[in-house]
Amino acid sequence: MNLERNHCLPLLLVPFLLILMTPSTLLGQGYEGAEDLRWYKGNTHTHTLNSDGDSFPEEVARWYREHGYNFLVITDHNYLTGVDILNQLYGVEGRYLVIKGDEVSDRSEGKPIHLNALNPDYNVLPQGGSDILETLQNNIDAIRQASAVVHINHPNFVWALTAEHIKQVEGCVLFEIYSGHPAVNNLGGGGMPSVEEMWDQVLSSGKLIYGMAVDDAHTFRQPENRAAARPGQAWVMVRASELTADAILESLENGDFYASTGIELSDYQAGREEIRIETEESNNTRYRILFIGDQGKVLKEESSSPAVYKISGDEKYVRARIIDSNGNLAWTQPVMLD
Ligand SMILES: [Zn+2]
Ligand SMILES: [Zn+2]
Image (cartoon, rainbow, N blue to C red; front, side, top):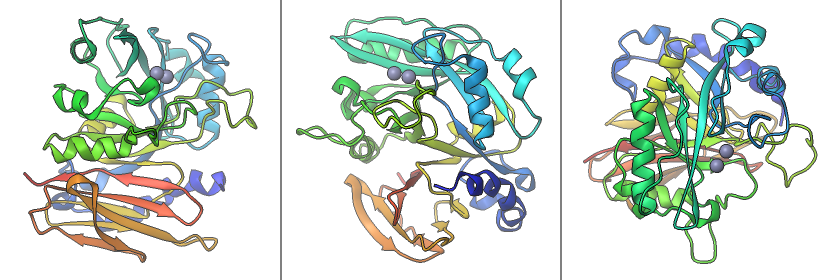
């Protein structure tokens, strides 16, 4: 993957987006100042030596800055790593920001129950509960109490969570549909659904939840080891008014972002009338754009840009999955129609 190209694209896209975007076509609410919106690349799940990562916070923050990211949330297990010094060292206004966080790491029924608190007021510790669902809900409530944004992590890690759990929780609109960690069973198997299939099960029930892609990086010192939880595997592209924790997290909770393992979209617009996705062929890379609805059914497949899906209104929801000819993926967020 040509990282150098990825570094530059978000900035190059700005003038293009300014021309194309109008408030009525945007996903989120409250974006009247559309002319100020930009795309920011970020990872919301990362570990350091303050939990089971292998590198100092300074090294981790530096890795993401040097690899073209605009923001990073450091999420050590049950530990709130300070970010002020990291922003003094590496922060650049409008270009790179480290946001504090913690991975609330609980257990229930013998399974790990992990949720990320993004920008909490204080370190949120595991709350426990009588079963998996209650443990999930208690931790979501505690994270929100700390004024943080919450996402549910790696549902298939130790096969801990099912679509039924995620359908029933309240106060959480984000979960990981793809993790770069090599042992979290993204693709399911042995009779268990992939996390993306789980996503469709939840959406088909009428519950809105947005899909994140993250690194869950632990290992910065073994770049050649594919069995390690390395950085740079998966991320989100967030459309926001400015590079501040508040603006980035507001856009995440509004679903104004897409998830990626390597695909950079030229443009992405979604509303109740249509979804429009633009890709740019380069180095012979070609794309498939699948528009997906109720029960994960493929409603339409497109192979050229722009890929447009006109919403009829009875699909229940429509989202898109983009696959490139080299195996990279991207997922746009569902438009709910009920
Ligand atoms: Zn975890
Ligand atoms: Zn983690």
